Amino acid sequence: MRRLVPATLLFVAVAWLGLPSVGEADGLLRRCRGLCEPDCAPAPAPTMVDVKVTCYKPVWKEKEVEQVITRCVPRVEKYAVTVLVPKWKDEVRKVTSYKPICKDVEYVYTAMVPKCVPEKRKVAYCEYERHIVEEKVPVCRMVRVPVVDECGRCTYRCQTVTEEHVVKRCVMKPIVKHKELVVNVVQYDRVEKKGVRQQVDYQPVVREVCVKVCDYDKQVRDCTRTVYDLQSEKVKRTVRYCEWVPHTEVVRVPECGSYRGGFGLFR
Picture 1 (cartoon, rainbow, N blue to C red):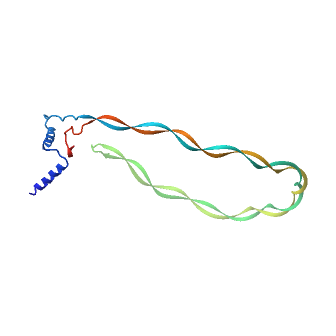
Picture 2 (picture 1 turned 30 degrees about the vertical axis):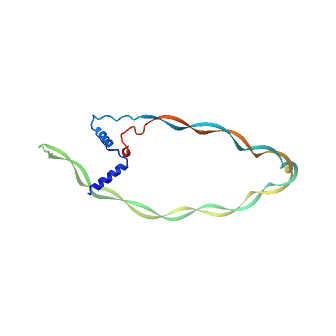
């Protein structure tokens, strides 16, 4: 009983979705089996019918529209301007200049006169004493030593031998001694002397010169200028626009239901 209830529900759902009848289902199963069986008949071609459909195509048209435009209209305007006009004139002015006057002036200065004075000074000097010192130093030399190689042959090999030799060297030992010497020392004496130097004085001199002076006169002049005014006006213009115009065409489409390959859920 439990197995019959799900089967019944499945059958009702398939019938509601529009599954084909038993004969059609048998044909569907036969077509499905035909995929594996090469001797099945091919599916019939669909039937084509003529159907009228409505299409739209663009059509360009022209029309006149009224627009408001703004233009710049020039006009001449008069105005007054104040200008400064230069005016030159000669004018006598007094100018003070300074004239240099040179004169000799005596002055006293102090001079440093050098003189040499002998003085006794104690100085240190160094004397050296010679000493002969004997010491041992390592000396390396090469010695040929007879050896026997792997084959039993006698050969010679050079080896380094270090020996100590007694050598003599001279050593200088410094001895510091002092003695007195007479040296000349330079000293300076202050001596006052008289000299002559040039001194420059400036004497003011007043003189009259003629210079050009510029004055400005204010003058009012009439001038003209161009002024642009904005004016709005209505004009008519031709513009192009696009309209979609419907038209009927006949097309060939497959007839609905002519191909019985499947219905309902499997269409």
